Amino acid sequence: QVQLVESGGGLVQAGGSLRLSCTASGVIFSIYAMAWYRQPPGKERELVAAISSGRSTYYAASVKDRFTISRDNAKNTVYLEMNSLKPEDTAVYSCAARRGSADYYPSYDYWGQGTQVTVSS
Image 1 (cartoon, one colour):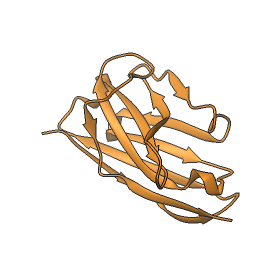
Image 2 (spheres, rainbow, N blue to C red):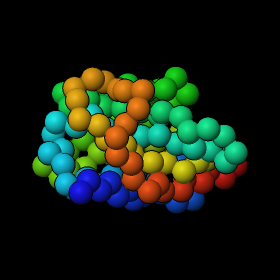
Image 3 (cartoon, one colour):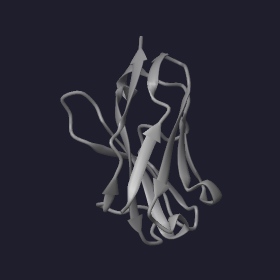
């Protein structure tokens, strides 16, 4: 049974930083592509960043140069380092997984429950 568990969300002031973590179980983590999505209040879910099994990365234009995705295969964990946070980054952030080697996919097979990130102005 595949499980993804996120942590690290919270309340932060604009300009601050947070690091999200997502730990996977029930998968051979190293062969899975991982991604972070977010869903702002009243809006659709959007892809934020993704990392392939080979560590190639993809970023949405809105977060490029502010967010960094990384993975630690020994810990079955993917991270999202978020810097220079803005109020518009407020959302529920979820991690996702899919077996494969592409940088990112249009859909993912497994999802975490999400963690709330709130950025105050």
